[in-house]
Length: 90
Image (tube, rainbow, N blue to C red; front, side):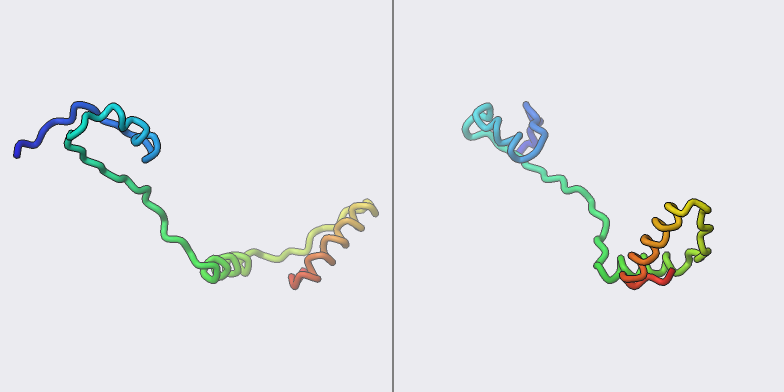
């Protein structure tokens, strides 16, 4: 059998290609190629958390300088308390 050259090429999603089925002659020889996007290997939640915790442990924990403004001091205290309740050491 001779390898015929395509007379038409349809490219797109399956829905887009199949929408042209009326343009394909009955009995025509078809070749369907599926191109899948390469995906990066997905990390498990435990691996992601381990990476984040390792990164966080490398961050230097310098005590932030508290501004002289009492309103800003109160906001800073509120934020520190919020994170303390969530188990972070500040």
